[in-house]
Image (cartoon, rainbow, N blue to C red; front, top):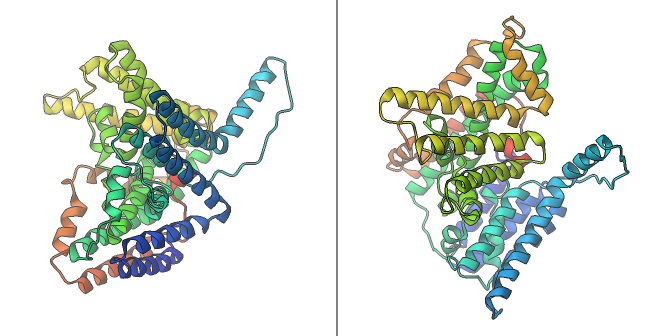
Length: 471
């Protein structure tokens, strides 16, 4: 079930009404939201609801079982076993084909060609996100920052809550589970905040991201060898805008729909393309993933506590594995390696990996370098293969006019204006929501309906899936 569809609109209206009508009975409300979340996930393919339930069951049972184990060694092994089980399922569905095809290529190059057991595996939507949430619950319970819940509904709902189920943000149990017991009252501020974020996310996705994909990015990256340097550069910057609007648009809708149900999620994007260093970029881009990688990978590896060289190693490994998390392809590993290598270099040059700040000139230089490093890495992220990525870079020496029909005032505006808005005053949606909250609920809803009609009128035909549904 996709957000920008009539099906989801009907589904959400039903869930919204049921959720608030049950607010006085917390347990029944949680059960209703859990059922709704499984309906939402099962709409795509009901069979993978069993996989979602398995991940939830492993997290719930292992955290409880750990309380009944006496020795520290046994507790550690209990936690490790559950993490291995969760990573094992993720690895099988996401990386089985990639590693087997890589092994076959290696054997072939060594003259040891073998028939390997290839399987046609469908990648479950959202498996990376709900696996990471399950792992974070297990680890947080082991660390003592979260108390293991006896009620399985608490854990199952935390891992499967439908607004953020398939593409994040990655929510922490310490932030989400306590909200389940709250008996909130629906108010104008909550409605305004949720609807403003939903409208913002729909516009980003349905108008900006979808037009950029159809009119510029997809044609160029389908055959990069057919386009000149100017169009390659424009498409690269266009993809930077597309993936931002697509992914932050999903996060806006997720946070907005959760707010309409009485749940508060933390911000997941904070004008990332205004960053003046790569470290600053990762504080602004997919903030929930950045925090997850820091707390559950970088710090356990030793963080910056083990000396300079190991700090560089840990930065690189964290981003390398972050690239692997994004997808089973060499291009994602290269993308992660570029970010990891640059983070390490940045730290070496500046001491803490901060902006090369001081004067305004240095800040501008830091932004220019950071933005282009990010865009270079996006080429590997978007290209269908390593060969296509290298073909795109090789075309930077082509100063001809191939593909100039894609350079229109409309596509140029779709690239330039969203980048310019990265430097607008921060927390714009929140400020708009506060202004709207002073109006009546009916007028807020009517304004949202008007915005929705404008978005539907502007948007191209068809419903394109969100980019991060693939991860």
